[in-house]
Image (cartoon, rainbow, N blue to C red; front, side):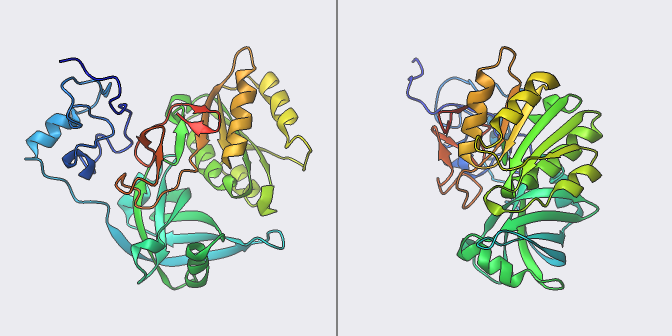
Length: 323
């Protein structure tokens, strides 16, 4: 019997092959990667690792434990000097060694919430740095959940952390360009994941240049951190064209293999349109701005183009939507 054309698309799953695979989606017939687990009669996953379907059968259809919640101490907090109507802070917490190790990949994020609060207070936060049993993150205060974190994340107190998750960076995989020339463009709180990406590229023998600006946050907080990681840094002034011309000039003369956009979807859209006009466009990666609640693909808040964005690798950014 032929496979219907309206079946849900298969995609690379960030959890595939990890200790968190197969997950609850497999038992519910909603697996991101495996068409067989979705009830289809043909394998069309394209996954070259350990077969998710066979692992599910070998385990007796048992689901491995979910990511653990840990109560961890706040080691340091630094408030960022922002514009008058914005607040943000840098936070460093101690975490189990295995969590720090698995958060060493660009696109890693964790869920944070005040100790003792219910999971509806979870805030997805990009990892800026992960090493030696420590995580560093940047948090912009925008609503009730981040206000609760601002009030509770004081040095010496504890915070609840859940992780690791890996879908914070979408599009081209940075691992393909670790020894390449990579250009990062970030404004506002988007500067945070750029630091992690710079370290990953530079330690792999590549070159990373960061074009950064204050954005709506009104602060540049990553310059020194990026320089410490070995990145070349240029702080962009405010411009009517939002620095698109400066980025275009850098791309034309730089010979970059990858452009990474860290910021809002409006920025991703502009940069995606820009590189499509180039004769030899670089590959494109962008930070995910999808709504994340459970981060396990269950709640459906992260759905984009029929895919569960907190699990699936979304390859293209088209017309303001991830496809």
